[in-house]
Length: 583
Image (tube, rainbow, N blue to C red; front, side, top):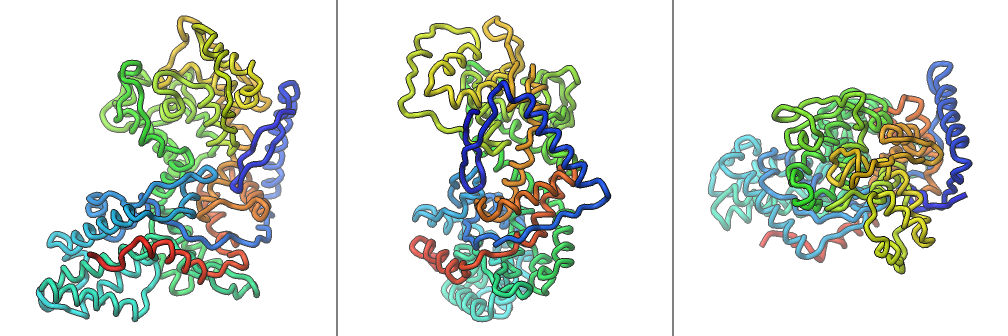
């Protein structure tokens, strides 16, 4: 048996991988068991699966991501205002495979706080300018040069409800109205004063941080649940990657989210909304680590057809493929790794060697093409290669970590590269890889990455197809955890049928939806339940989102984690960085 790390949302654990001689039989048996289980679940019509009891999730304080901030500004004030102001929030640290999980453990530096305040000033100025005020502010002041408490209060109350994601109490609105009045008196301009009050809201910790609060659960004495407005925010950032809209806040305020039927109706509305596409794009963009495209570049001498626009289109191509497959056509998630359906742009056509028209057009690779599934798209091939050549190691590592949630340990600090340096000129990547596997300190990791990465050597570091490397025919045979294959198509099928592929997606979706890494000690049974449901329902992503969003665990809070402490923590994080009023 060979050991390597299996990544779970709570960390890593040693997983035994059968030796190669044992793998084909065991892999086939595992695949049969999965299919048999799915058949039994659906046999007799309907599901008898019941959600297991759980301690729930921790209350969290999460920094809003830059994209969530921009989406929220666009939803409240309009895309033109949002697009005119770059998102001021800092980059996040990837935690257990997701940037979204890293948002639960990040604060702000003084420089970042200053950038946030500058963005708030710019947004507030645009909201009250002559171009926007008539449709963003629901009233007109009696005088343009003097305070108007009634009009200011109406705007601040409505806008504050959306920004804070819950109604503001009268005291809070009154303080903001006083700020607007003072600003109007100092500038002889009602709208300038209103902009000052809006700026104060935009830099508030309760706006830029997603602060979760709880309440006693009346149906389960002694337990806590998210309060209705926190649940609305958790649902919205999960499914829409933005703050709740007015209708969702209404559902929280009138008690609809406190009932099973009301929550189900709300989730169904959200799943039917066009905003679900934004949420799904954000999730898969995060899961596939597409933030790396911001720093990705190829050597223009080696790959002259690959420009910044090409790489941007590669990222977009994959996201369009995913959305079309799992959302628009509502197909089996696993088939993303074997589908020949995608979309094509002029920038990508040169690399794929296909004709196309201007703009994005649907495209299907022919059956005799070596292009099948996400692994053969330029986004995966180029992102997990070097600037001047391909990399079986990087590609194999990415396959395991992104889609199977397994961790490939980093190389030891004392790696001896002399064998590779003394090897002279080798013709193919497979020959270079063979040198790695002769070094005991390298072999452990390379044996779990390189064989699967070599199956993609028909594609160079930019994703161009090739039959030979240095005039030598490329050997793409290999094995993925007991399943043998002969070419990229075979690898695609092996990954599609891998038992850990749906497990990984379920774990990632649950962590993404609940706002931070999950604890396998507490959540293992819940995750197994969601996976069983995912299998039962034909591996449909929308059904998985529905199951998570309407589950008991999604809204249940672990004991001993009171909301007062969480709110205090959020305030202390921001207090030393953010000015409460503009300069």
